[in-house]
Image 1 (cartoon, one colour):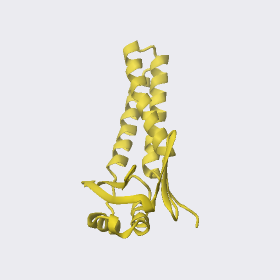
Image 2: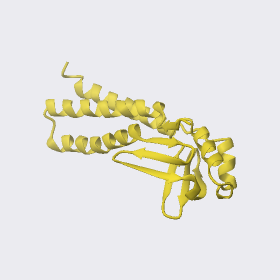
Image 3: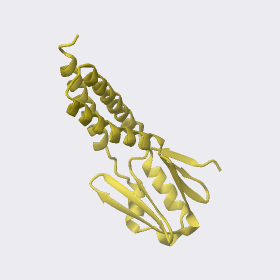
Image 4: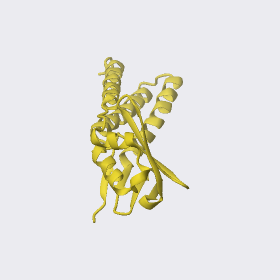
Length: 173
């Protein structure tokens, strides 16, 4: 059977990519306008973690196969066979959910930032040994929370950066 593949929601990656692009534009305009070095360094310090978060988020994939779950991240990957899983638990804070797959030697944590999170969770619940899934996890698999605050925050950052660029370049052109 073909593995099911899950990635971070595009509705989050799009504004995050725009934040990276607008941050680069802001940095280049700051250099072009010869702003004080402190401002340029602050922009560069802001840009580095944003680029890392974007790269990590856009490359992150979860593969659900017949015998294991595999997660690919930036510069690393992890695989956990279903037969080795000793517990699947969930932690939910408001609309944010984290699923923990545990074995004796390893663990994996997945969040509801993945596209089709409910289907992903249901597949995991169906494939692992019966006694390792908590009741709370089974309940959440039936009605997964929809998280949109991260998307809203990313679009808010796009709006703020656009306004800053506009104000900064207003007098130049």
